[in-house]
Image (cartoon, rainbow, N blue to C red; front, side, top):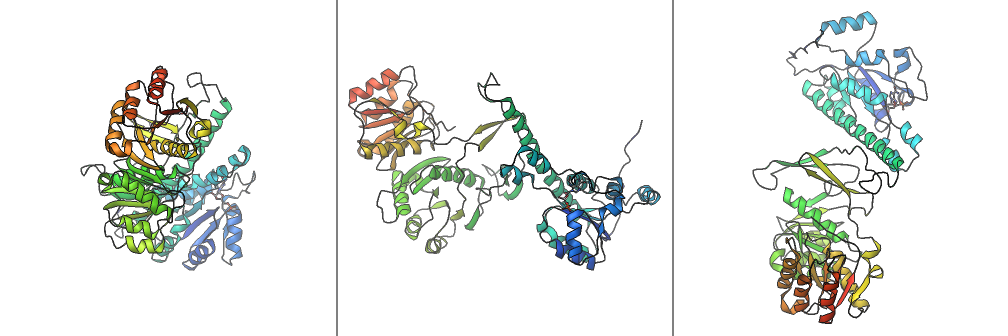
Length: 547
Ligand SMILES: NC(=O)c1ncn([C@@H]2O[C@H](COP(=O)(O)O)[C@@H](O)[C@H]2O)c1NC=O
């Protein structure tokens, strides 16, 4: 039986600091390379490099040893084999704390490396460019990750750097006498995170290719294309949060993927974002982004307490949308999160300054709006890049022992616009009425199911959210609106009415038109109730549950 030799503990009094004498540099992204090479050379470091990296270093007038000289083997197969050689990997994996490793290197005539600087072929960017499969596969780096993993495993001896943004830190360490063990460990952690993210992207792409090849209808259970056999994502810490949903829960926010999104938003002002702020801001930004016209959504506990678009011809559209969203439920708007789909203007800022608001999120803030809002100590101001409206975007939700993955719910089906609706009861609405009903339909999607939203003139006036039956949501929406605002309003329901009781509550309150998906076995009873009240009902054929 063989056993793994146990690693000796570091006894170095200088925190494991090791001088850097020999570096292996092989980078696809050449930014900062000349400066790095010049200063490594200036610090007495021998540089070994691959093909075009070596050419760039030499062109900068810095002495460089081509890796072929180390391997005694030419680069071959269009660069598929450059550094995959024992003379490289033994030099990366020899543990300087083990005399037998050093003796073996001597015997074999292999010199050890102290520093590895590598960045990888741009796999994700090549996929994003829409390149053909052969080109994508060619951009799977093999030798690079191998070097990164070898040197990261051997971090008690070798320092590994995968990010040009860390060259300053690297040079400071090299010029200051070498890396400490703590620095090499931190670099190794970043290196393994980098190769894990890289391999996750490769595995996801392959799984999608296989699923696509299976084709539509190949998964009888789903009645459509088979889902990819692998789903993976990786996250990079943005910040540790003060606490989670409650003070006894630890929490943090991580960034995934290429887009900055909310996790990578720029905070211009205010206290650090909390866990609940992130949840509510996510809902608010999404709710505002569902409208093409200037729109504002005010969110409390992940539900809207007001959504509005600007009235046609409004002098300051985003301020108008905010004023009308706020008017829906001023009591609940206290301590809310506000998102706009247009830059925040001074007029909107002046309105916001009157109300205690946790977060304001927008694609931008006018300078004079910032002047007003930064005078408020506690409000958090976030510049958030709007989410792309693409069917390929996915939503992930953890469940116990697993993960639910779905396409994002877009409001872009034919049934999401009046031209795709069916008039099921009553007289057809005029253009203004239809525009109001379309606004209600777009807005109700932001409300947790069972969702009923009453609107007039492009603004919500009563919202019934999150009830466990639809009739209670109707009652809540009517109660929130009050008798006067409910009378003559229009209503949207995120899913069909299973019975006529819910719609009857709306009709009794004087709602003049209702839009809903339809599809209940009792649709005829629902339609009959609307007809009897002399109101109008349209069916969309599309449902927008939000759980
Ligand atoms: N095949 C190999 O042995 C190999 N060794 C290093 N690379 C990669 O080649 C790139 C650098 O090559 P060049 O110096 O020729 O531009 C780096 O991104 C590095 O990760 C390799 N390429 C791909 O696997």
